[in-house]
Amino acid sequence: EWCEKGMKAVGRLIKKMRVNSAEFKQLLKHPYRSYEQVKAIVNYRDKHKKIEGIDAFEMMEEFTEEDIERLRPYLAFD
Image 1 (cartoon, rainbow, N blue to C red):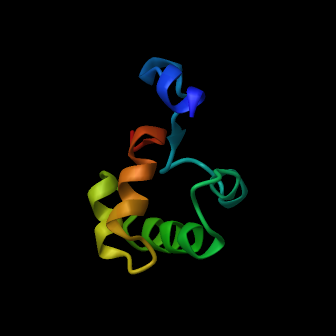
Image 2: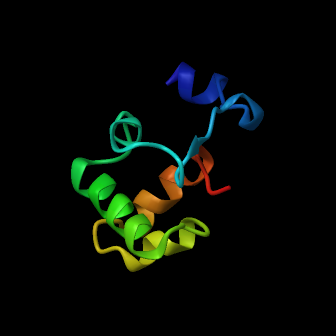
Image 3: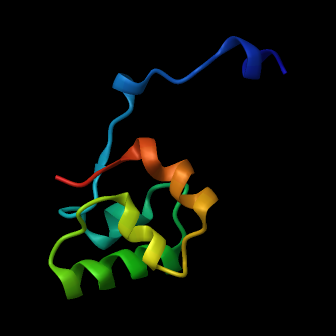
């Protein structure tokens, strides 16, 4: 309980993972992604060449709205 009230993440200290250039194994290392989600990301990237933003995850059945919001601070799409 103390941790929840006394600590918060600082946005600029978060190292964002580059979704469009990360390899499968790198994407899989993130604790908020499952194997099936990483597979969906790589398949989408292979088909469309690039993921423009996290909104593309809404088209993937492997991601819920909660998943997307949880991942938002940790991903970069440049």
